[in-house]
Image 1 (cartoon, rainbow, N blue to C red):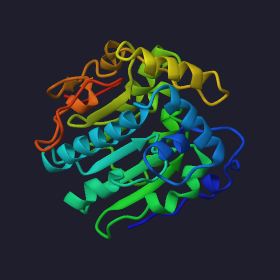
Image 2: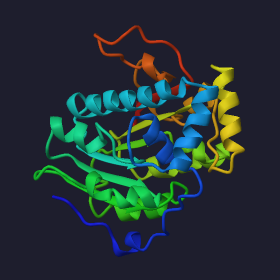
Image 3: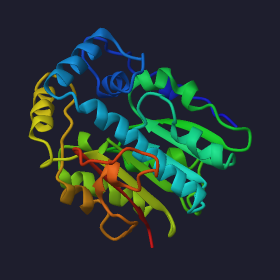
Length: 270
């Protein structure tokens, strides 16, 4: 089943092509085409300082795929709330999950008008399952939960995905509050997946990110691995805990993983 974008979402502000946007730049680094010259210029300026950002973007996507595969195949999760969706690329949450269990239901959340413009690609679901799109900001968890309840049954275990989104919340205590409010609405047996850019690993990465934040684009704030770990307080972290994402349960045939400036983990709500 596929659910339509709401009229409220359709009335969202127009896309501003004069300012680089993180979702479109991320799409560019992943090899996508849904971006504008201003995004490519910002992306190229970033990679000129730190070419490793492309590895971070692709490692983040691979980490998320491994998380979802575990959640569906091993933990039996059949509901996902994916906040900060970004632009559709290969191996979106519903594609990975419904390939294993077609009955899985997914709600995507984003407030980027370009993501909205591509929402049909995100909303394409298997007949047995469901997908929907919520036009909302991560800083408004109550609105997100109310809208997502139209597709998800919050009396059943649900996986909350926050992939490279909490860095857009500058205040760490506010970011923790957002996570707590979202997880507080989910029942025992639910899961939290988080990955974000990390401080203290690569000074060149940090230099490039500081320059990006000063460019006029929406800032993205790196956090220490300890700060990222604190988002999982009160939950049961799965092994190997919060680590640089290539080190989180790498596939047997993958190259030798190395530490990069992106940390993440997966935890269960007791």
